[in-house]
Length: 172
Image: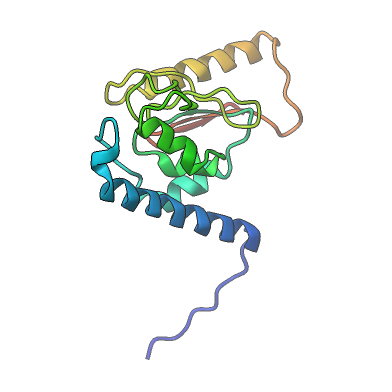
């Protein structure tokens, strides 16, 4: 007989856990929908975040509007968790002019975004691993601004740069 291990209380609120679960279900449903209707898309080479939903959502829910993200084509779950809607993500998949990243002009899920209420996502190349270059540049730029006393952050509010390859660099 296996003894039940008592679960310790977690600092994560029930509201956050439910939000994360809804986002995980949404990401999975989108992946299934994309596969089911692949012939309807303008350019179908979709690689979803399947299997990575939990870790991507955990990351995305912690990003703030002062942060920077270099996302790529397998980061749908992160994009959902920062506040992008399934509709907005589908606009790019179908190369529609209302696509929030590029108006349907860039390859699918190479996001770039500058909204005041979301982390900033710089434009990047389609080459594999190209998330590292803009992320490094942003981190170096923040380091320079801080060292020259050209920027001041609220107490405890320091930006983070996140590369979709899993690296995060907290400047403080």
